[in-house]
Length: 388
Image (cartoon, rainbow, N blue to C red; front, side, top):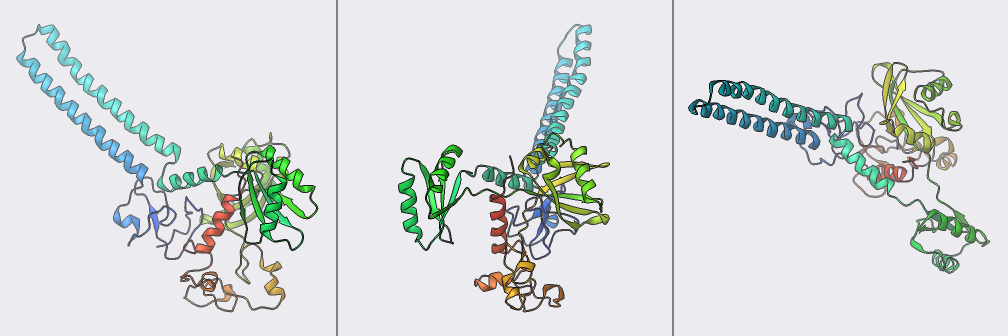
């Protein structure tokens, strides 16, 4: 079962209407694709099997345990009452003790109730649903990625192996942590610090037969969900800046750009914005939420890759497709036939890219079950500079 029309997966932030099942926790009502939440192999929708995400299950178990403790304490207090009846105490002392026992019971019950409420509130505050737990673990891996990279390629027809030897000789006094070859015959080297990377880059620039770049990562894209449509894009950006106190960022008006918009439920739209890493870090510090007019809107990182709907390759649009310039027929992104996808009448789903690489292809080119599509999404995620 695919995701609901008005709901985004909390891990990949995309919808999918194929065979991927949609999981929704019965307690927190949040969910995502079964593949994204690592809950594959289910034979039915999660709501039909009473699925509860791990953090909510932890809260439920804690509630049960604490309430069992309350019942034990209440039974102990009843036993104490019965014991006091058999013990001959001064009447005033016995009356004081008997009067204090109900207050003690109420106090214990109130303390346990507050503990349960605080634990549930912490789960809601931290957004610790299962999908976001997976998403946060991926963010941690992403932020640990070393940024001190250099990409080196030769101007002529020099072999990559010879180029690597030359680079290692030139950088003999600089510690190279690791190096690897790319599919295009270039070399990527990883250095210990930004200072050493800059020193190595300056040294390699002195060599005339090498082209060196520092592998700068891309500016992030974010999706602002369920916003009222605004035809004046400039006023919308100004509203984002003013309402969220972003004026302190130098030149912020030029660091936010509306890239696209997608229709959403209730006549609203999801706006995709491209922003500076500093802006993204500031929004992340506001719990990934933006204030607009009278509402607060959730913000997600947007990693949807650029897809050519003519040749179905990633990284360019159909306007600049060389296959289209050469007069090659288009391929359908739904059934992989030789026609435009928007005019496809077929109920068959077949991925052109997977079929070409002899993989299982019973899905569309942008399905989450497509390994080529998901690897492209991961490539964008890892090569984006989020600023945090």
